[in-house]
Length: 291
Length: 334
Ligand SMILES: Nc1ncnc2c1ncn2[C@@H]1O[C@H](COP(=O)(O)OP(=O)(O)O)[C@@H](O)[C@H]1O
Ligand SMILES: [Mg+2]
Image: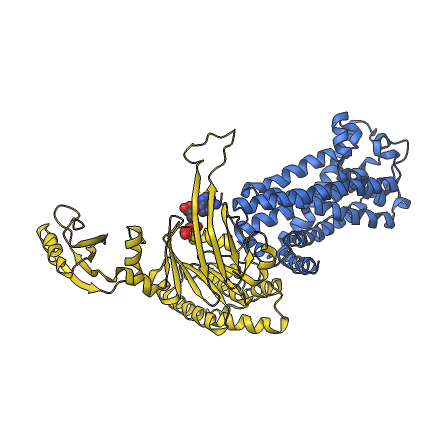
């Protein structure tokens, strides 16, 4: 425990040095502000395009829905990419992974610390994006201002952190036994999860089979929880209320997030142990795979 | 057993080459298993500076990886400081460290000092002594002026020197150095060799396993050394004892111009125990181990008769290279 805490401390420090050491502030702005805002603005424009095409029949509450969940999802992608990229960058370019592995450091805490630095960056990006969105009159008007709930926001952020840890460890573990091309894995998985967890549409839109897959992912509950905490619930008359989750109250949502997260944590730990052992057997921890 | 710093018992390691993939056609020869270590048994006492000598691909790095808990052995067992490298890996890690030469590792974004500081923290070195240790080590490798430079601005050799410091800064009980002087300039290599000897003598109970493919380095540094080739342990003794094995022979080095009919064959001549030739752009270097000294007459005659012109001829003392040739049947760099 003591060793875990110590490793967590220095690896978060290291992660922050690596993440924040932007040689060029313009790149930093581009990456952390321009890119996420552009991604969200694209959705905003699609919303307006749909609205005009249907002569205004797209309900206004769709706008904050897609805007907030897309911003929050950025955090998921960032942590998954960040933690799996630790394996690749440390093994292939810094060539330090083997030295960390044979040191007394707690190896998993090393990934978590590095991921934590990433998560802080992602949180900053999401906050900036959402704040920018609130400057748009349409979004501000559509947000149910009374709906903002700081208490639930904290609950969902904390549960979300545990969920992100599990997601990140699954990706990092998989990449341990892959070559440099493992870089693309996190992008691919992030895309699939984006599709299945109702980021830009309620999952009721999906075919029934896929709805069940979506309902087994903690990200689905997390995003719904984050949306409710930030923008309040969609009105009962809205098509958004067709979503299977709309009938759940927020407490049930949090419990379901907790339950699915626990399952994911157990799976990620089993997978991590299995992967690490396999990598140690096959000499993948130190192998610079090149390519 | 616990009084040994290192022990391996019939240690083996097999690498599986390229796994079969259904979407890719694989060459059946390439998917065969490769034996990198074959039943290696070794014992090293605390306080020893023990060398592993062998050509590229002999299995030296593989052995170090297993002993440092980085890689699983395929067969046999190994203990470091009395702890099993598989079962007790966690307990062992605080007491060991490793440096691989010839590679440029380090977090590029951090300075040299920060990199070393980070590793001291990982091993729990007390804050009060960290900076003093870092300064002392940087002075050894002549890198003090780069202490605050970003690692990404260093040359490969400078990074390697920093990596060397990283190994010592945690004050390990057993230290593994894998070709520490590979690619370094002569002065730096000499300083490192000097420091290695001082380090081991400074505190009793420190043990070092060093691999090299430089014969002279092994001869100068090691209390005892093991010669390995193709994963097999061929001999293990002090450098002096190993050289005694070939002392019964007279050794001559003869340099000559190429003969008219290509390479000159002397190995079959009476009294010649072994002969190795190395071609340089301008001459051919011939080294012969003779059962009796008088056999040199026949060798000289053979060279002259084949149209070669003798440039130099001298009698030499046996080196580890000769031991190696005797054991392996070819030179280290052949
Ligand atoms: N990951 C690996 N996969 C397959 N073969 C390997 C791997 N690592 C090393 N080898 C092979 O094992 C042999 C021993 O390698 P190594 O221990 O690095 O030798 P040395 O350090 O003595 O030069 C070499 O022939 C090398 O090609
Ligand atoms: Mg090697």
